[in-house]
Image 1 (cartoon, rainbow, N blue to C red):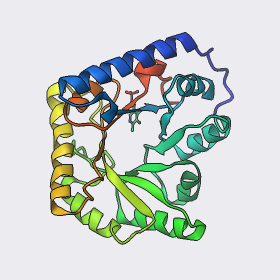
Image 2: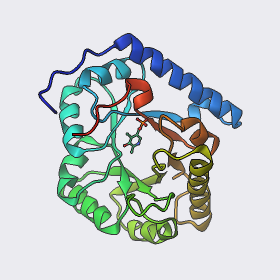
Image 3: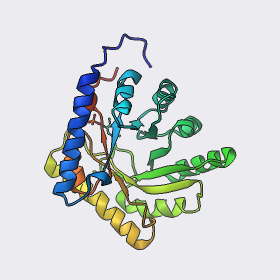
Image 4: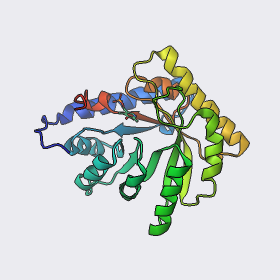
Length: 243
Ligand SMILES: *Cc1c(COP(=O)(O)O)cnc(C)c1O
């Protein structure tokens, strides 16, 4: 993490924002005929200081997601005394697999057989297991990571023999700056893909996790079946622009 002075953490503000997100998520679930408890809120904590994350964990939000392995590692150390669950939600380079597996209980960004095999080999060496989500590029942006929807079945077939990985479902990242009319079909597509893969037996019946939706659109994602939404800026405020 950077040595630049961090602005003071406004704990009361973070708690109020968390309560607001939880209420909105619950209302969106009910409006969709779902139970609020069926949607978990993951805090996307990239660039946030550990102090801010502590406030959130203490307030009853123990599920966090980091984009970069380096930050995941730093924060795991800073938060070691607080029970919480960390997921990796950003791309994983093969040379960082060992570090990621030390701290993350779920890798949400598995999008190639090569990466999955690397994870498998590492877990065999340390006798470990990890939950994974298959990241799907539902917006068909060439720049996005994730397997193409039509490639998901093949990737799952490649993952099937990798017994150290427990596939829990699918993840997608919406296109930033897109409108509701653009984003909603990509979330619907992820749900339809999950249902088709379960029907085909490519996904286990209980591997029904759908990680989708961010600050600007998590209610839409819940309407389309999200079981986990990933929110950052609406809880912690705008992030500093990347340097
Ligand atoms: C940053 C990030 C989020 C959260 O974005 P916000 O708009 O700040 O809520 C969700 N998912 C991923 C993969 C992210 O990188």
